[in-house]
Amino acid sequence: MSIKKLQEILDEIDYPVLMEIVDCAWHRDEYTVEWNTDNNLDDLEGGDGDTYSVEMYEGTAEYDGHLVVNAHTGCGEAMTYFFNLEKEIKI
Image (cartoon, rainbow, N blue to C red; front, side, top):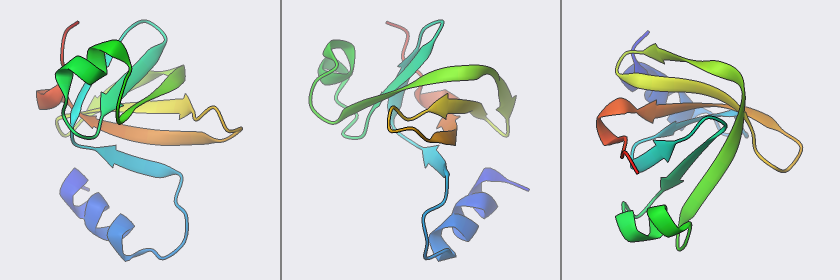
């Protein structure tokens, strides 16, 4: 299944799904992934504005141009994230 098809399915579901496709600027280090939904690189680097982060806990994989990450949300939940590899920023 393509990421595009997965997004179509997620858009049709009317209850919380523990999966998110992230299509904005992001970066990673050994333990975390951070992204900024406004694609503001200054905020992303400083952790300001609409910048979010999660802690990776089971490694990563690449699929269909995306980095797939299982992560802790910080609210007691685990989610699977798909990060567009074309939008990864090296900081």
